[in-house]
View 1 (cartoon, rainbow, N blue to C red):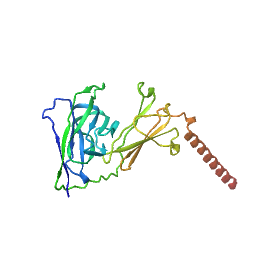
View 2 (cartoon, rainbow, N blue to C red):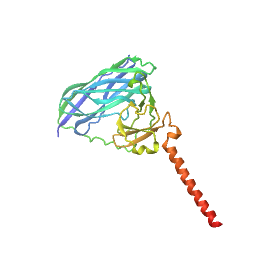
View 3 (spheres, one colour):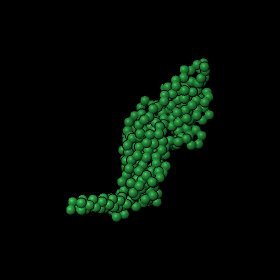
View 4 (cartoon, rainbow, N blue to C red):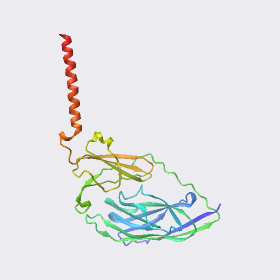
Length: 293
């Protein structure tokens, strides 16, 4: 049975002269129904902690099926890769501590080949920032990739591999921060984690001043950064991360300014419970003495 074959041409110089390079490299496997994966890589000769840009592709030739970032060098997405207007994908993210190395995976794009033709993947408005404490912009060279899709008499189609993911997202520690130039100076929560299997799907946050009563509080679907409702920082904050396979991980952040003991219902519960148990024990002891007299 006939199918579509495609060739992608990626041209990289032998001697890079820029501090960083961002480029495409396709997976060599042809998947079910002519699907293929296009990876976006970053080469960095010095530590870089931020990247942003847009990916362009021809929507008349290719259909975007999925975006995977489970193995990305970016662990804090300011704007997770998402398809916006037709044929464009915007993204921006941070790697605390910086990334330096070759072929650092930024994210992967899975496409379905729609028809034959010639086109190109492009990178627009790309920027990278140095990990120098000042956010200095570094020189970045972006490489477009041309491709050709043509019909052939027969193409052996290899079924796409099914990713089995039973592991929850990686452990992480949320941080509370405040900046006079952000959110009108209000306290906000920053969090990020990774999932090496299917990638992170979403986050939920819960705030509660009484930890034992947290089950009665509602989870709020959100993204980082998240403006805290309790600006007095007297609440326990719980963050729940889900991967695309439905696995989840919950982490808790204790209050920065715990409630005074007399305002904490949990303490009163302990005191009252202790008092009742003491009273019961006293009555039992008194009855035993009465019976023994």
